[in-house]
Image (cartoon, rainbow, N blue to C red; front, top):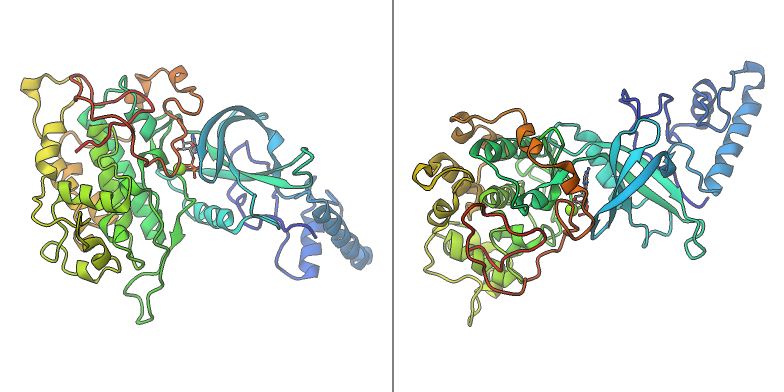
Length: 470
Ligand SMILES: Nc1ncnc2c1ncn2[C@@H]1O[C@H](COP(=O)(O)OP(=O)(O)O)[C@@H](O)[C@H]1O
Ligand SMILES: [Mg+2]
């Protein structure tokens, strides 16, 4: 048997027409008789013996035949329970991440737009990669309006001579018109306070759902935040996500997680200091970086090494020491990072976040005399970007923050903002604009010096970053 079928039951809640009406079940883990019974009774055009009528007298014979048929299909890698990707017409490539390409595509039967995320199979000798299966299993649990909507998993058989007999899999998502990185880098997109507040509310609500489901995202960044045509924000890219164990549920030793997570520019101090028992608060730091970026229109701390990233954090959020974070000296890399010369943990640095942000919290289309700092926004940003993870609010607490209850209160969506952006502008190819291929590791230092701040909008030309914002 060359491969096992995909075993996550994505189709159970299928109500939408793009999904096939007939239940497409993976090969059940249950006993042979149960399997045969399902194949016979629930026989559909998708099953090897589609539409067969149960016949008690021949039951045992049919069981054998069914199993033989299954065996044959799997040997041929036909994956009878997964739609073939030819059900979708590929339109353009919209992303190139570390783990695969993303295409915009149209469902041939319903016309619905989707994003096809190709799963890289290079290191897979057999079957569906475990990392992708984890992503799928988590997304199944995470049905929420602020989380990317996984529709199904598709397969495609390779025709090329080199990869013959290899199956490629695609995750099929509901298509979103924009990603936040692209939106923010487009100077034509003018956002008002209520747009920013609404998007932040969606982001925090999605994160809260994630954390309540006991899942860490571990790659929060603007490129992994999508906005639908209707103006609803969705957290996306669960390629690095993992379930977590609650710290205080038992006396059992806490598991150690991998430390190599989160794109450098969005990585919190505890990860940079080697923590492997981190919590949901790593994602909260990412939410803080994204919130600030709503105004700066580019990542706020663009280090090119872990040391430089810590220095940038100290320069903006103040020195990292036991006064602000009592346990910081227990971090695995504390001593290594403190080494002189050019310590990654410079002391004597003041926290200037509020001061710097006040200067940047300008709104497009609002005259200078009418610009006023939103102190509630500042206060939320302050806590999201607290150096001590324990001082950051949980997503649940952040959702109830004062800011969200002050005028202007968040709206159900930012559809009006979407209406100001001609769709054609976002039919970009990789490397330009909304769906530019900002990979997971787009954190190399960019050449050149910081550009002067623009008068009208903070947005910078698509696809470019200034050296550092602060
Ligand atoms: N559902 C979607 N709709 C539109 N674009 C998407 C969708 N999912 C992903 N993309 C685009 O593809 C890019 C890469 O996808 P992502 O899931 O982040 O994978 P990777 O692990 O490769 O970064 C995203 O930054 C976004 O621009
Ligand atoms: Mg991504």
